Length: 181
Image (cartoon, rainbow, N blue to C red; front, top):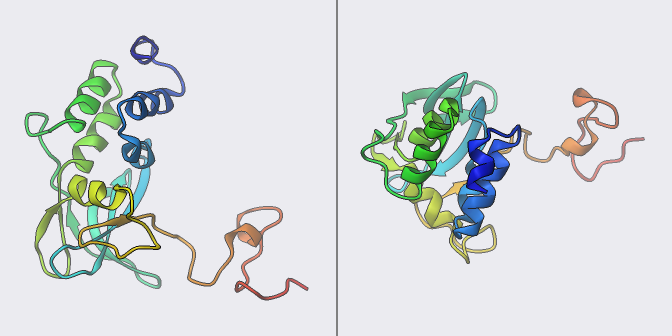
């Protein structure tokens, strides 16, 4: 598979994720995107506020997400330097740089860097929070430990995006449990 990566396939991220999965790093496959417009939600381990983390063309920052106001009180992420990276981040970054995947490499530096909480101004490791949340037994059916990450829903609570017309045929914005008739 490493030879496939060196060849620069169109599905580079998928092949990289396959290698990570072979090494038992399944949770990084979920987080590893193209970093053009990626958002994550992390709970601050110090004050428990939900912090949105953005990595992409719109910036690399942490913020508090407000449905009406958007991302407020933005704080710049503190990406890890290549020398500071620990495995698996070090391997992921070195592989992406070797293969000329520079946007991916930069995104990895941000995922393995520090996040500042907009509410209490404490800094914490995104990678640690993500790894803790991804351990077996972590999830919606268990108590979330401090500093965990969850997928960010871009739809308001109670809305079913599978029926929304604002995104194309077969879609309509309506509260869950209501009839479309």
